[in-house]
View (spheres, one colour):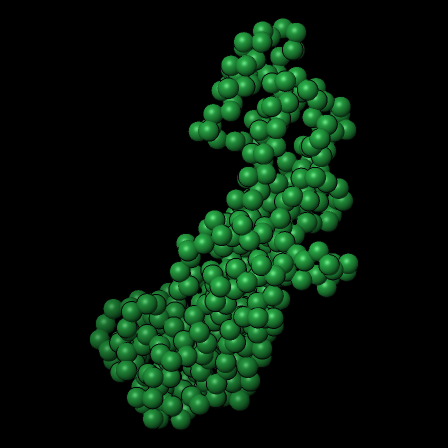
Length: 377
């Protein structure tokens, strides 16, 4: 890029007009900021090496943090997930079906996937058919009939789904026995059609199968469906309740997200990380620090305890924050270059001190995250 070539040449060999033109080019609003571009501009300043190293470390850390925050990170295994897994284990050992209910966005699907991992077979003999102790199926967002429910089981087992109702039942039974399936987690069960309840119940009633079905869904909708089948209601009376994340529980979640996801490397201390969430200033012990009150109220209002919305909001706010700080450094570097001054006021401590997600950043993205639009349901 011509502008970069100009800036990286010795100052005495570049006219003021060419220097000014290069700066104007790099300052265009439509020019995408890149890590390489920023490094080139910093290198053109001929700053003292220790300061250049410090700034470069901060910039590298910010870019690394953006990449990490953008990544599809596995959601943390919360205490409630561990309780759910223990409850499911009890159901399997006692050979009792059950239902798990909770509002949208409290982590039901996430808990199911962790549970499936817990029951994963450690089979060593690769010549045998794999064992699938815990099968997970997701009903989806539309009503599923009994036949469609059987087809979902076959899809999860990667088997053909064509045929009559009787053929599907026989095929499902054959492969559930073949893969030694002990339990089936049926997520979004509130979207089952009424006639599918008997099919679910038959999985449990068939002594030859000995499969324990566990239905998971939103509170009112699943309970309303189960009320229609008295036998189903009686058999699936054992219930696990997913709690909503509000108040103190939401504060704990925010601390975890701040500790593991919404953070960047600390350039002043190798190995440490800096949480990007704003905390109250009156806490000396960082381990007991509380999230800033205004920030917490804003997040609680926006998410209503929905983990999926919270995750999206915090990740987007963190990316916006880091990119804004990079742009700020970028702008100051250009101004210093334009006036041929050294950058003596920019340092890692100042940048880190200002790099915090606060209420004002959250407010700029408010209203973009419907509660039901998430993958943590």
